Length: 323
Image 1 (cartoon, rainbow, N blue to C red):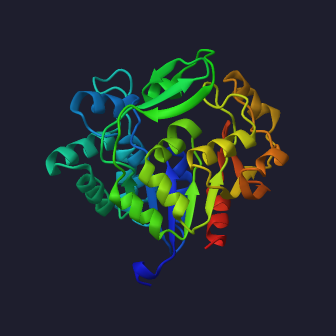
Image 2: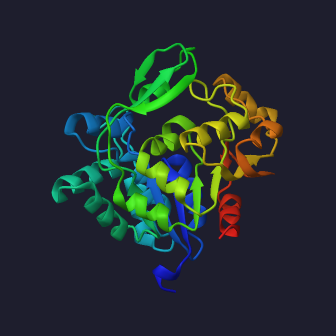
């Protein structure tokens, strides 16, 4: 079937969470677009961004690897190389090989889109990965006590008992990537998440053109709620708080399908999360209904080692059912 005739699914988020959805969705004969936040400022990405003025590569890399072909031995070998990260004893400590290669391709070609296109061709990517913006900006958060913290990594990694987040904003006005806007306008389904609420999903909604395109879209909006709360970001948040924040940054646009996990996790798994002051997101149905048209309370999780993850198969099956 010609690509123009395929149903179009747009996934909006960051790296780790979106990758889960993308790995499941690429098994279907659909046209996939991953719209990715570009405000990461930590780790390898942050170093390259500070030193060379490059955009954030980390989340893009993860989405490219998630959409890469699983049916080619050479691609499979290359994926492992691109995902390799140098250890702390190296002068390249913390750097991902994939980030370094994307930096080199950006330098060689003069822009990040050319780098993405080349990596996509090499990895036989099944879909497209689109930066939400091609401009540079820092993610900032105003706290409930009025204090302001700057940069995505400062929001994501803060471990002190700071007040909750009141508002997210960017430190400068940036333009949305026209490819991202057009993808949303053409979408048959829009999936928000899974991923960190304040550092992966909502940053994309801080661009007016993106929010307007979503608000005006006739495509159903699906939001995959987090499985666990996160200390420093969504501490003690019930499911309704996740939904209300999404609707707030969508300027009142209701969520069509709000996916909440129903699986109960064993105490042996939860003990590890409690040490990080995290716990399962509680299901407060009566409050959730204010912000969405349909609540889907089902098992969307699985256990991987000592971690809980969204189940890419179950998540993608639900998305496909709405096409």
